[in-house]
Each structure stands twice: as C-alpha cells, then as structure tokens.
Length: 283
Image (cartoon, rainbow, N blue to C red; front, side, top):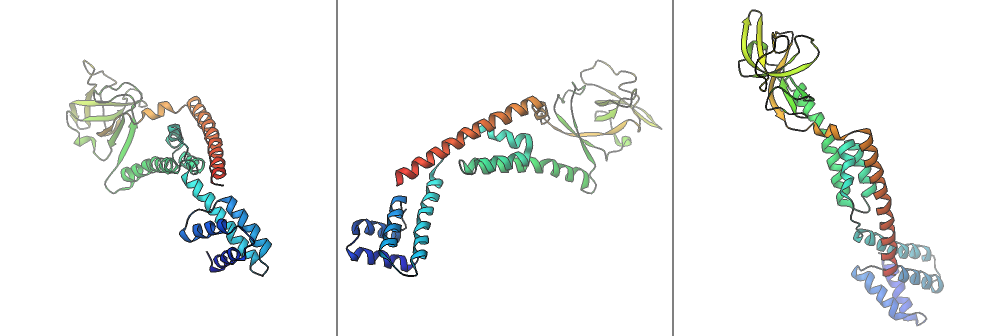
C-alpha cells in the first residue's frame, strides 16, 4: 500500500467534510493489515473522487479497488464446502485424467481433497509405469504379470490375484515343488499355473505338474510340459489387485460419472451461495 493513499485519507479526515470516524476506522484497518469491507471500499472511492483533484486520483482509486479484491480472496480462503468421497472414484477409474478433473472442479470448494485426488490419480498413473520399468528394463530382470481370471489349481491363488512370473529362470532350473506358469500342452492357448510334482525327463527336459486342489495330474493338461510350453516360475503374488477391473464396467462408470457431476453442480451452487452470503455479511 502506497503512502500517498494513507496521506490522502488523513487529509480527508482533517478536512471536516467527510465522516472522519469511518475514515479513521478504514485507516486503522489498512495500517494493521485488517480486511477492508466492500462498503468501506465504495465509500472511500466516493470521497476520493469527490474531494481530491489531482493526477494521482486514478491510481488511488485502483489501490482502493485492490483492497476490496483482497477481501474477496480472504473470504474464499475461509469458505469450505464438505465434498463427497465419491470424487476419489474419478482418479480410481481414470488415474491422472480423473485426478486432474477432480482438482479443477474441487480446488475452490475443497482444496485439500482436490490435491489428494490429483495425487491419488498421479500415483495410480505411475504404478504401472514403474512396474513395467522394473520388470522389463532393469538389467537381469525378466518378469511378467498375469491376472488370475479363473479358479486356479494352485491353492495360494485366487481369482483377481496377480501372479508375478520370472521368465529368466530356465525350465532346466525348475525343481519339484516350484509353481510355474505354462501354456496348456494340449491346446497351446490357455495359460495355466500349477505346481511341479515330477521331472519326467532331462533330455529333452520335461516336467509334470498338478493343481493343488486336484487329486491327480491330468494327461494333456498337467503334462508333458517342455520348453515349448514353459513360460516362467511364479515368484510373487499380489492379492486381489485385479478386482478393480471387475468394478470398471461401462454401466458403473456412467453411473459414477453422472453421480459425481450431479454432486459437483450442487456443491458449486452451495459454494457460490455461501460466498455471496459471506461477502454481504462482511459488507
């Protein structure tokens, strides 16, 4: 704030032609850094325009208007509308895109949730990229990820679990008791995950598997597994992470987006109403 405006206010107070008490309140508020209400701003503009005649008047008026704008910014900082947790579904379904949309819509009504939605979407966006880089580009690591879509024959695997497979382990290094992933030897299309129960031959290397829930191995399904059918060895299980895919259907996405948009419209209307009410009260 320039000294010119403060000097002009003091000059007006001493002139005896204006409300000196009101100007004194405005001057004190400016000096102490308190808010200047819009009604005081309009009054100050009027008395300056009416009683001051020099080349600095336009600049003084702009300074007075800036005081009012700062009040509106302070009001916006104090406003807060409780927003629905459904906003997190946007970054959940659309990661960085959904997080950005949530941030743009929520930043004025609920800045903290807006930031959380954006960060959530960013993390979901970076997770698959990080996994891809680690599993495929790090030297010496050749991993693949498979989601279990059917009831698995291996007892530790459930539908929607994600199995991490090490393709760097050659079939000759597989031992009895290991869990491997392989193509169905009968069709060479279906991918199976079973436990090795027997080494049938070492030249060519051939193994026999069995599902933990099965009573015995099935010819043409569990064996013979050779290098041609072998994909890799199971090294890690990420439980139920694929369950999210079940939730992501066209119908569920449409319902979610419609609900969120509706909530957003209502919250925006409440925010505007609360903002208008707060500014009027301060005036």
